[in-house]
Image: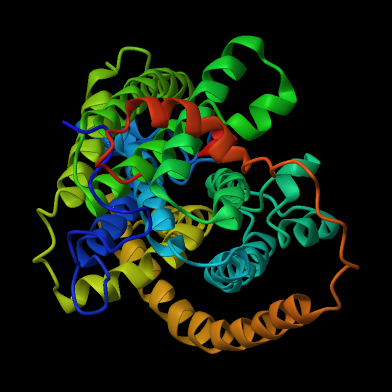
Length: 419
C-alpha cells in the first residue's frame, strides 16, 4: 500500500459532492452542532449558578432536573464545528491564491459578526438581566475580532471560538500562499501537531498562541479527513486522524471536568463527552469516505446558512430572553422552545437582511483592493543567485521523508468566559 495516493497533487478528487461541489450533509451537521451548543447553554449551563448571572435565577438542575445532566455534555457541538472547519477550509482553499482565501474568510465572518456585536451590546444595555454591557472602547475593539489578543473581554462569550478560528486561518494562510497540495497539508498537520504537544509541556506563551494545543487537533483531523475525501484513505492519513482523536479526547476530558466544576456538579462522569467527541470524528470520517454524498436535500443548505448567525446571537440575548420569560411565569420548557424559535427566525433575518446585501459589496471592495495590490509596481529585479534556490518551507520539511517512502510510480481550559 502506497503511503501517498496515485493522484498528482492538486488533481481532481475521486468523489464529487454534487453539481455545485457542495457537501450538503456538512450543512446539516453544522446546524446540528449549533443546536447542541444552544441547548447546552439554555438547559445544561444557563449562564452560571449565581442568581444574578443565571438565565433562570438558579442552577439549571433545579429547573430541568434530570434533563440538565445530558445537556451538560452538549458543548461538544464545538468539537464537531472545529472538525468541520478544518475539512471545509481545506476543501474551499484548494487551488486558490492567498488573496482569495483572505477575502472569502472576511466576507464570511464579519458582516453577521459586526451586527451581532452591536445588537448584543444594545440588548444588555437596555436589559442587563444576566450580563452587563462592556465599555464602548471595548465594544469597538470587539468589532476587529482580534480583541482577545489585546486582553479585552468578549461582548458575548461564544466569540472565543472565533479567536481560535482566526489563528487557524492565519497559520493555514501560509499553506495557501505556497499553494495547497497533498504534501503541504500533511506537513502542516504534522508540524502543528508536534508544536501543540511541545507547547503543552513547555508553556511558552508565543508557541502556545500559535500551536493552540487545546483545540488544534480538531482542525488537523478535519484537514486530514478532507485528504481522505479527495484522494482516498491510507494508513498515514488515518494515523494523523487517530493521533488527533487521542489529543481531542484528552482535551474533552479536561474540559468536561472544568464544566462540572463551574456547574458545581463534580459527580457527572466524563465518558458521555468523550463519546460525543468520538461520534463527531466518526461522522466526518463517514463524510470523507463518501457515505453522505447522496444527501442533497435543499433544506440543508438553508439550515446551514442559519448556523453562523444562530451561534453568534443565541447565548447572551437568549439568556436575557429566558430570564424575562421565566420571571413572568413562563414554564421553562416553553421558554426554551420560544427563545430557540425566536433565535432561528432572527438568524434567518440576519442572513437575509445583513449577510446577503453586505457580502457582495464587501466582496467587490476587497476584490478591487486585492487587484490593486497585485497590479502594484513590483520591486526592481534582483540578480539571480548562483546556487539552486532553496525549496519552500513545507517542501524543505517534507522532501526527505516523502522521497524515502514514496514508490517510484506514485505521485506525490474551560471557564465561564469560554461558554
